[in-house]
Image 1 (spheres, helix red, strand yellow):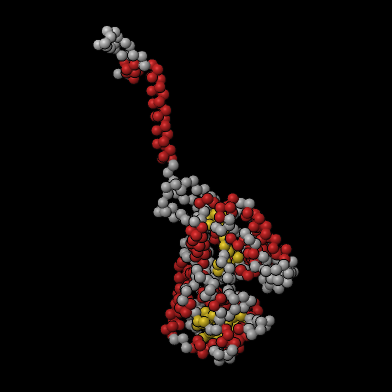
Image 2 (image 1 turned 180 degrees about the horizontal axis):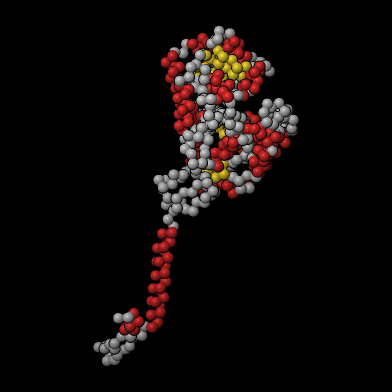
Amino acid sequence: MKFHALISEFCVAKPLKNKWRNQSRRINCSKYLCFLLMFSIVLLIFLRHLFFFSIDARPSSHHHSKKKIHSLVGESSSQDSCLGRYIYIHDLPMRFNQDLLTNCQVLTRSIDKTSMCEYVQNSGFGPRILSSEASGLWNSNWFWTNQFMLEVIFHDRMKKYKCLTNDSLVASAIFVPYYAGLDLRRYLWGFNTSMRDSSGFDLINWLKQKPQWKTMWGKDHFLVSSRIARDFRRKSDRKSDWGSNFRFLPESKNLSMLTIESGPWENDIAVPYPTSFHPSSDYQVLQWQNLMRTQNRPYLFSFAGASRTRQKNSTRKEIIRHCQSSNKLCKLLDCNSVGHECDDPLKLMNLFRSSIFCLQPPGDSLTRRSTFDSILAGCIPVFFHPGSAYTQYLWYLPKNYSNYSVFISATDLKLRKVRIEEKLVTVSKDEVASMREEVIRLIPRIIYGDRLSGVESVEDDAFDLAIKGVLKRLDRCRGSDL
């Protein structure tokens, strides 16, 4: 029976006999028919729409760099490997970063041996090492890397980070690609304090205008510096005082800064100086580690550096004296006399891989790049101040420092209560072997790998550990704010 016939039969019924009244009555339900039809149609449309919406709302897989996240509703951590690891990068005006590289000549001082423009090459790694001495031992993974290029190196790696997002609402951290160290370098010598402070002040004002800042007032923001933390904490406006006041700006105190040397301040975290070794795969790292295990090391200890004539009671002066009187147990590379050789990665690696111990005293500051060069060469570092490593690189070096290094008190050395060679000779062969293996094991953690597109990359290098540390730190920060 057709639908309209059913409706007609339903609405127009047969006459009914009433036992109280002997009369018939016709039921007319035309008023209700329209209501039922309209209600049924609306209900059908609603249910159909609800069904298809539920299908379309299924979350898509996570995006990579420059792809928008559409939905994370209902998506579990097993489906999204980036959950909790998304990072948003601020698109800063170019004067805070790229313009410094474009106008790299302003970064070079008159006393610099090499133009800073040379080091800008290869995303901050510098020129590739090409040398007649490089046969067999060196390959395309070695570069003339300047320590002040860390900001450029880190920014390039951030651009290739697999969990980038352009939706700051889902980001666990926000990266500020400000080249703080390079920017300050332009004005450190011969400029007044207002010039040194201007860019940092302008950056903070720019950040404060962004909605991302207001979420946690900058506590989820981080940046990288290729200079020590102290360079950004000038305490007065006297022109003779060193550095800028960037980290003393109230808003800047909320930012986390990864720096080559931290201090007693809470939001500064030390990360390794960049070395000249930038491998693109774990296999290349393993090859280098195995090579360092088989090196012949004829020298008990070595030192590469210059004395600090302006410093009274210099630890370096004592070290050089000990080395020169050690009866060929020590190899000295005096940077006062040989100059440019101390900047040559080939010369330094040849020295350190020929030595059992490498002396790492403070210089202009507590830390040195040489510490990481010696670790890279499988040479056991000898420290003279806890702030040179033990209280610095907490995300990278073992808590038990005696597992990978030797400590000699600088005070005892200057008071001549200890002799370096006598201290080191007492370390047994088994202890040396154990410490050297620990040092070689640390190599992947202190290098910045070359993250090439489509090439197997180094896992858990200095960059990876920095990102993990930042995310973990910010997660704790959010927990404490609840």
